[in-house]
Length: 201
Image 1 (tube, helix red, strand yellow):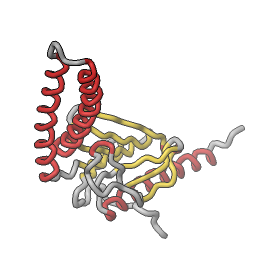
Image 2 (cartoon, rainbow, N blue to C red):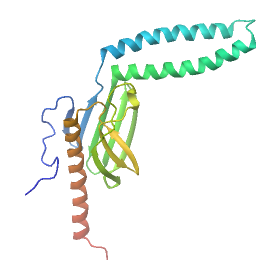
Image 3 (cartoon, rainbow, N blue to C red):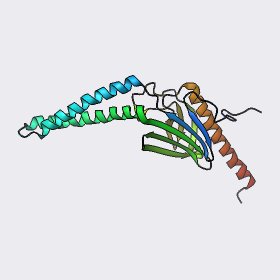
Image 4 (cartoon, one colour):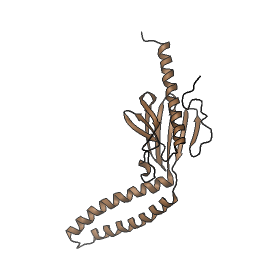
């Protein structure tokens, strides 16, 4: 009998960078951020300069007697500079503390959680609302987008493309795809069996 992709896979088998665990509720696939020391050092040094620029601009704006055109220009510059600093800060924080987890929840569905420390974003999808599971051809090849990077695993959930697996190698992404597809196929098979056993009146 031919097995579907991922069927019969041992969730606890060693993985190069992933942590995959079988729990009472299903399977959890944990992917920590790949820490790039060079990127972190550059980001920290840039943020030091960013903080100095913030202090200078705020000091000039608050100083009495500053001409109005200068205050307006500094206000505009400070808005862009602050946004850029927050973006770089999020990248550094992702490198140091970031992680994402994909849950295959029995009697539930698929959930993706991305977190930086205690800050967490989570989305859940019923297995009947997922399709087109596969390896993404346009996953980010760098960590320059941090928390907002596209992952190597993609699927359609609730009509939109979703991703998981930032910075995963292709073989790791293929393993995750197999686990997701096997999970979905099994639940849809159970639904079909239940429908056959209990036909509508």
